[in-house]
Length: 214
Ligand code: E4P
Image (cartoon, rainbow, N blue to C red; front, side):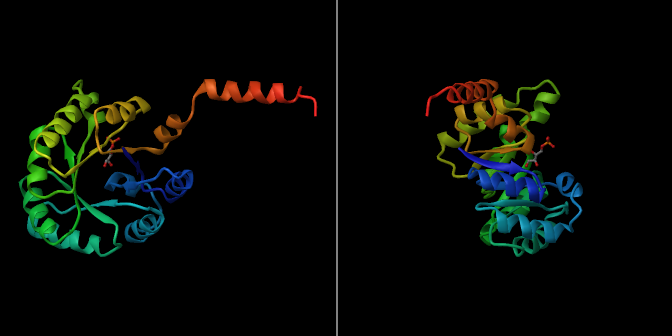
């Protein structure tokens, strides 16, 4: 499974790229609003650091406006994927952009039907938001299970990005279900690498090593 960082923060992205585990980055308007650098400058810098796709989100709502906005975003760097919220206008735009070879990440997916339509319109990625479903007492991971099964049934090439990840178990369950990608906030990425028994084990080994005769 590929791991993307769900962040627009250049230091976080540089840090995780340094761990050798970064396959891509997803941003959204809320994440971008936390950064001091200008939007385009920041996205270009992220693209330069990232070995895979970087999602940058369109804010237009009508297909005729989404398409030129997405084309402009795609020109920022060769590894841009344009993020477009699912909906009738989003589907129309995705169809046109996919025909031009622009990678579309259809976002704010909350049902398998939305994912299926996004794939049929030519989206390269779909982003089901599992944490936000869990937040309203629905089962986010059940949605991933459904989408993965449907895409497998028909050999659909659209990749499933498990988004709105809240904790390490979300990442592990996503991998167990065969999702292509999980996009993970920096804090969860840090939790994934740590285990208290690893820290205790290292401490014990070092304490015993100090007793070894040289
Ligand atoms: C994914 O592409 C989104 O940027 C993100 O995962 C949304 O997460 P949130 O529900 O924590 O805002």
